Image (cartoon, rainbow, N blue to C red; front, side, top):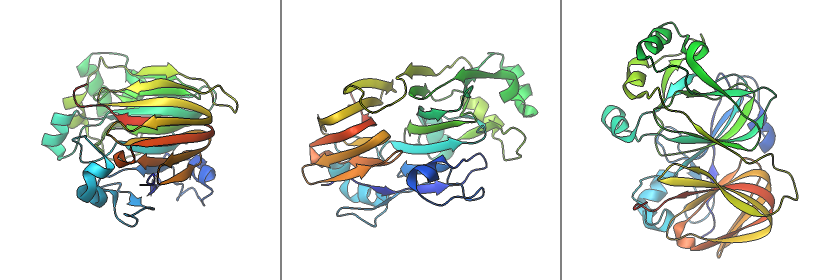
Length: 315
């Protein structure tokens, strides 16, 4: 089977900028900014539609329901990892995501671990990752007047090529001027605890049910992509049940599926992803799902990609 392409599910959030639309050559306005794009998602709220192959026109969830083993392979999940592109013209709300057990009990959803690969960052750009205090009452008081981000958000400077892992329960917000690709787990439950005065609904009680004030993100630095970098592969993030690798290609490199799917996301240059049955081309921010039944695949071009994989259950 060919690598699967999906129709992105676009959102135009209040904080969205134009860089996704510019990268993809689509129209944008301040109102329809396409500032967030769910590029691989089987979540009911952000569902992708298969664009090619034998399941073209089906929702990804429908295709998985009927062909789980063929597409995802030997994994217990009912959906693949989620890939989202985000252009933050303004800082996102300060958020917390729940762990699996809480999300299942409270929302009927999966928990959410996420990671951000930084495509570009304006000079001085920062994100919030963690709290500057472990005093829960102080945090609650600041959440009550929408000042928790200003007063207790841990600011982390980032630049192109950084890969940031945000564990569940960590207070976080993508900052103004950051263009990023998010690699995350299956859920889509977000609890806002600060919205910078924009007036959207907050979810303070549930957020504090799952907030771990001691949590901090981990950051790995890979440097900016440029043509002609030597071919290499490095572990970008390790969330336990999934890993994402940063792969620089100058020519072609082959991979084994090892009985499970992979998601390939282009974060520099142009990539061609080929299975024994066909190939697809990926421009900047585009992703494809390599089905487990392909057994092998190759990535070619002069490019940088993220290769995100579900790890074996025993690991």
